[in-house]
Amino acid sequence: VVRPDLRGPVERLERRLGRERRARRLAEEIAEQATRDALHDPLTGLPNRALLMDRLSSALARAAEHRAPLAVLFLDLDRFKLINDTLGHAAGDRLLMEVASRLGTCVRPTDTVARLGGDEFAIVCEGAGSEAAAELVAARIAETIGQPVVFEGVELSVSASIGIALADGSETPETLLRNGDTAMYSAKRQGGSFVFFSEADRVRDLRRLHTESDLRHAIERGELFLDYQPVLSVSTSQVVGVEALVRWRHPSRGVLRPDLFIPLAEETGLIVSIGSWVLAEACRVVGAWSRAGAALELSLNVSPRQLDDDDLATTVDSALRGAGLPASALWLELTESALLEESSPNRLAELTALGVRIAIDDFGTGYSPLTNLRHVPARRLKVDRSFIRGLESQGHDRAIVGGVVGLAHAMELSVVAEGVETAAQLEQVHELGCDLAQGFYLSPPLPAELIEDRYLAEVPTRLRVVS
Ligand code: C2E
Ligand code: MG
Ligand code: MG
Image (cartoon, rainbow, N blue to C red; front, side, top):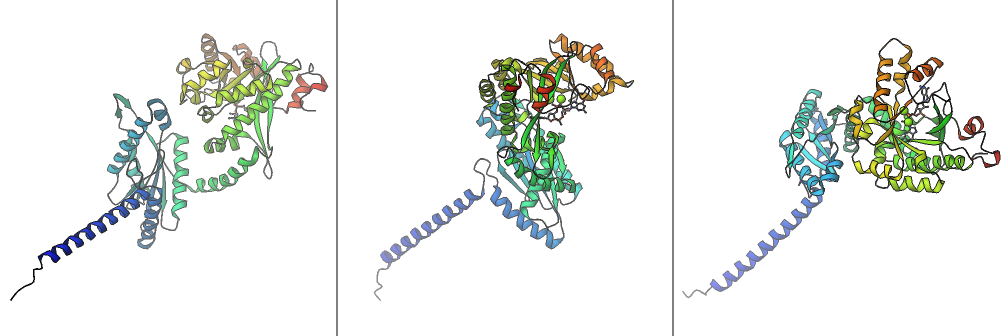
C-alpha cells in the first residue's frame, strides 16, 4: 500500500494550530492583564476601590445569607503628607508599598486588603464580625504598622488611624465604607489608633451631609460675617486691637457659632476658602479704621489645615496690600498643637518674613509645656479661658497663670488673658502680669459698626466702614 506522505500537511496543520493556540493564549493574557490593571492599584498591586466594592458586595451577600457579620476597617496613615513633603515622593511610595505588604500579614488570605488612593486603605474581614474579633485585627494592624520603617538610613515611625464598621449584610458597600471613613476621622480627632462607628456618628453624619452642602454655598451667598472682640491693654485699659470671629447666618438654623461649622470646614478643606474670605474682609475693615486714624491690631484665627496651603503667605500678603494694612498690624492665632504638628515648617517662616506675627491661642489646653514651643516663632501667648475662670477659686490656677506669664515674658512673648468675665478676674490678671485682656467683662464680640460707635470716636462718621 502506498501511503501518501502526510508528514508535510500534518506538520503544517500542527504549526497552524500552534500559532492559533499561542495567539489565543496571548489574547487571554492581554485581557487578564487589562482586567488586573483596571482592578488593581499599580503601585502596591493591591485591589483598588472598584474591586473592593465588588468583593464587599459579595461578602455582604454571604454575611446576610449565613448570618455571619463582617468588619470593614478603614485605614489612613498619620502625617503621611509630612513624610512625602520632607523625604520626597520616592520615600512616600516606598512607605505605601511597605504598609501594603505589612497589612497583608495581618489578615487571613481570604480577607481583602485594598488601596483606596493616597494613604487610604480598606480591609474587609469576613471572619471578624464581632467587636472583639475586629478589635483584635485592628490592634494587630496598629502594632504592625507601628514598627519603624528605615528609608535611606532614616528611621521613620509610622502610625495609622483606623475606623471600624461592622455589618450584618443589610448595608450597602457604599454606606459601610463611608461609616468606616467617618469612624476613621473620629480616631484621628481622638488621637487613638482605632474607633468603632457608632449610632451617634450616623446622626452626626446625616447632619453633616446637610451642613456640608450648605457650607459650600455660604461664602458665595454672603452668609458669613465677622464680629470683632476688643483686646485691651491691662495697664491702660485702652483698646489696642480686635480679634475677628467668624459667624454663619444659616438660612434655616439661624446664626451659627464657629464651633458648629469650623470643624466641618476643616475636615472638608472648605476652611481654606473660608479663611481667605475672613482674611480679606477683616483686613478691609481694620484697614479702613487705620486710614481713618484709628490704628488697631487685628487678630485672626488660623486652622492647622490652612498651614498646608501653599498659597497662604501670598493670600495674607495680598489681603494686607489690598487693605493698605501694615503686616505688623496682623496677628495670626494658632493653637499649640497646630504649631507643634505643623507639617510645613517653612510656612510660619514665610509668614513671619512678611512681618506678620504669630500668637499661640488657647494656651494650656494642649498639654504641652511652654518649653516645647521655644522653637516656634510666636510673639504672643493667649492663656486659655479655663485658667482665667479658675482664678477665683482656691485651686492652682493662680500659680499656673503666674508661672506661664513669667516663662512667657522670659521668652519675650506678650501675654493675653482670654475670657475675662468679672472685675475680680481682671484684677487678678493685672496682678499676675498679663499684658492684654479679652473677655465678656470688657466687651463681647461685636459687629464692626458697634466697635466704631463704642471705641473709635476718632473715626469720622463719614469714613465709617459700615454705615
Ligand atoms: P478663640 O480664638 O479662642 O476665640 C475666643 C472665643 O471665646 C470666641 O468664641 C469668643 O466669643 C469667646 N469668648 C470671648 N470672651 C469670652 C468670655 O469672657 N467668656 C467666654 N466663655 N467666652 C468668651 P467664638 O466666637 O464662638 O469662637 C470660638 C472659636 O472658633 C475661636 O476660639 C476660634 O478658635 C474659632 N474661630 C472663630 N473664628 C474663626 C475663623 O475665622 N477661623 C478659624 N479657623 N477659627 C475661628
Ligand atoms: Mg483666637
Ligand atoms: Mg482662644
